[in-house]
Image (cartoon, rainbow, N blue to C red; front, side):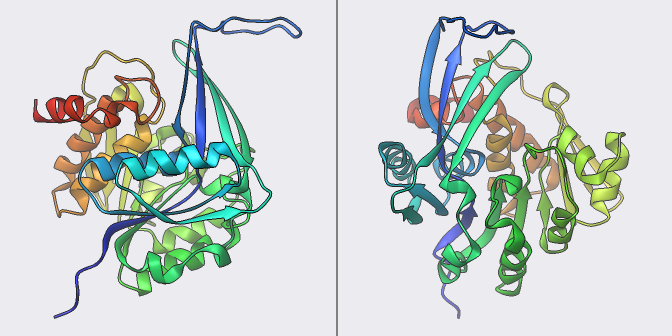
Length: 310
């Protein structure tokens, strides 16, 4: 009988901190100083938020990424390891800087300013493929930020599939808003695609979300399209599923989509029905919005247990 996999999931992606400033105006004038009402430095990046929260839901996570030789990188590692994530697959780039994202939440939208640092330098050759293979599932986030890795993401996913892993992808936004067709080639090897509504439309080059969902579902076995306050719609072949969001007192929506992914895949890897995966994803996404940043709610063990038990 074969040995069980060491990890439930291998996560490949970027790693940086989020510096969040609250209470700033919706518009800025050059050469003026503005005073924030509050601030928070927390673990950021789509991949790391997902890995952190997925681990705290009770899963075994191996994280593959890169940091520089600086204090930001050390804080990132400490936060990941505190959640139970195995971060031994994170490479340190000598003499380089870890990325950071500055987020300015507004009532309905937010400003997001990112310095990529080494996240743009990690290559396919920097990954420990044998270690990735020790998991049951591969997940990758922030496709368009992985500048050096991007040309071989399809190779990575093909390798994972041939090694018997299931796979998932959350492309996140394309900062250049070009949405080039190479990402479509990756979908051949993806089992679950997890875009939000805008990302789905841009990926499919369709203005109508339902047409985008159909286009993508013709290429991926299961497409899950996050729609913010309208909940989530999923499509598997001709089957369409929907779930409404959970109502909570929201602090901010940073990392809500990544937390949804964590909740969804938590159930998906346990063989749950799509409806239950959507419900749990919405629950995890809503929970993340009740504290500042994408991971702070999950870091409070007593609060987390009470919320999910209720």
